[in-house]
Length: 158
Length: 79
Image (tube, rainbow over all chains, first blue to last red; front, top):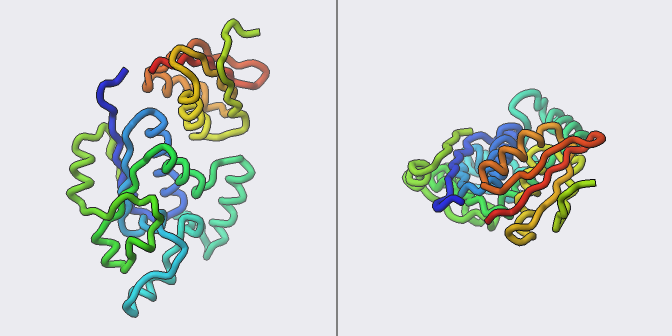
């Protein structure tokens, strides 16, 4: 049908559970609709592809690490109340049989969604490539994202 | 009761967005071009979503109907 695949590029800047959920729902759907899909994780968004490990070497780096979560630990943008909101939303989503965030991420990986990490924010936040899940293809800069986004049919910043 | 003979059936009942579409994509890869996939879903959004998915992937949606609270789709794999 299509000679060349359509493309979808998504920047995931947010580390909020709800926003990251939106990002993965769109990414998996785009991939299921035969789009070549790329997700570029930067700043707080890096938590969505981070292992559940401590990070950082400097004092600030290690301090920041205490506030960084993994995909299962991030809370909603509103009403988190120190983790209560995350717990409540997880319960409510489970009651509705909504796919969980870790499952959505795995689904994205299975559908060949390309996961890229922002090199610069990794350095600032003292997050190494080894701190990220193995499926992350590469750590790259903004130009790589722009090059992808330039010939994409959908570009989103979440 | 259907006039179609599906090569495979995907039971997506109880699944919420985006899973009916994502699973449909995975299941259709398991049948041969020209064969028919039957999809059963209860997500009210699936009527619009599976239709949109078929349109954009180029697979042929032969029929979409609601029977006893279940949405049924018959999709012919085209490529």
